[in-house]
Image (cartoon, rainbow, N blue to C red):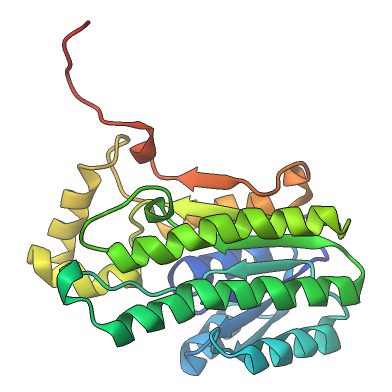
Length: 262
C-alpha cells in the first residue's frame, strides 16, 4: 500500500519544479492527481509522464471561476478530493524603492489570493466528497524571515503562513476533519531560479553561492520538498495542523560561525 493510496489530489503549479515532483511523488504513492497549471503544454507532458491516475487541468489560480471548475471536474472524475497542494507561485527581486505596483499586485494575486482560493474551494470539495483532507500551502523561508531584495515575495509568503494557521483553526472549529499546513523551503534548484541565474554569471555559480548560506552545504532539490508534502498529505501527519514545516537545511536555525564565549 502506498502512503496516500486511494486519495485524490489537486496540485497547482503541477507542471514544473516542486509541483511536478509533488505530482510524481503522490502518484507513485497511490494517489490520483490533477495537475493544475496555467501552462497547458507542460501539464500535458507531466500527465503523460505519470500515466494512469493523472489528469491535466488549465488553472489560473487568481480566477475564482477556474477554482470552481477545477473542483467540480475533480469530483466528477474521481468522486472525492482529499489533498490540495497550493504550489503555484512567482517571485520578483529588485530595489524596493523601485517596486512596480502592477508587479506587486500580481504577486499578491498569485502567491496569496491564489492560495486563499485554493483553501476556500479545496474545503468545499473535501466537504462534498465527505472524506476530510489535507491542504498544504507552499510558503517559503521568506515567509518566516525577511530579505531586502525580495520584499514583495516575503510579504506574500508571510501572508501564506498566517493564512494557513487561520484556515487550520477554521477547519478545526467547524469540525471538518481537514488539516492545513505550510511548507517553507530554502532555495530550490528549479525553474523558479532561472530569472536570477544571469546575476551570478551561470547557474552553477548561482547554486554554489546559495549553498554557502545553507548550513548543510547544499540547496534543496524539488524532491526534498515533495517528500515533506507527501508526509503532510498522508495520515502519518494526522495530528499536525496549522504548522510550518521548514525544509531549509538549517538556515532558519541561526548563524553558523566561530564566536567567542561569554
